Image (cartoon, rainbow, N blue to C red; front, side, top):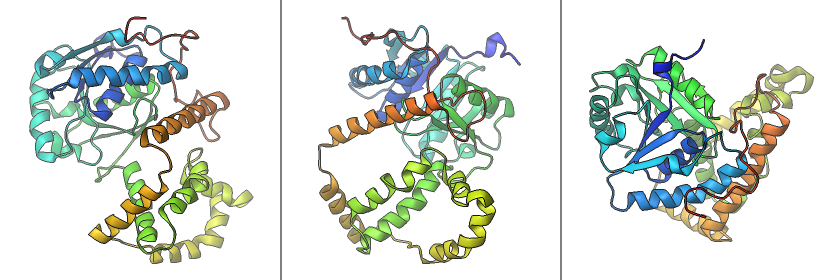
Length: 341
């Protein structure tokens, strides 16, 4: 069903332009949208401009939407001005419940009634964030994965008072700009992907603290082992393939018992000074290049993976594409339009 003209999303307000917010700004611009960004911090506009310029060549390589340009970005330090004509708001403020409750009430009073108010919160509950809003039906979660301008995943969930239509609009919007939104059906702290990460982190910290393996070898065990499969299929489908023709049923018949025993033996470390010190020291020893070089290498490999998945198709993707990039490629050799040539 076509989206009514009055509900189409053309103008996005990004509130908070730190690492996540700046990455969102670049993603929205690359999707051909008009973006207004706001952040009261001193020097925020200059830092945002630098970040978008840094991200733009990567987005150009992945493919820009028709009409995409850095010049469609406007910055203001005034929240009311930023929200005045927004169709969609992506909030990236401090991860504190008290702040979110007050701030969403303020944004709700300032944004047009048609606007969706989405939070990038990593773990807070939408029901709490919307609790002081006059129009709580439009408040929801749109949690990205860092860096949002590259990683397709967006977790979408409403609170107790969120309208189903608002969730549908948000899901359609994120999909339309090349994201891979998932609809979370029940509020839990940390949502889905962060909880899955937290489970792995818990055992990784335990293994490092107990001296079972070095930090570097633990990273290698994931990056050069199951992490490669998870990037393609996720844990359940990878297990299904491991069961051969019998699939998941065969695997659980043969490994269900051992897996359960591994669960019982998993660690439950606390963030003691000793555990922190061991992990910090191990990470420093494993870092063989400057952090900026590691980040750049990560992004180059990630671009290649995204391009390969889009070109070849994901093994378990439904018909109609993978949703991992913009549909219209940018002209070859396009320079960043953020600054004069």
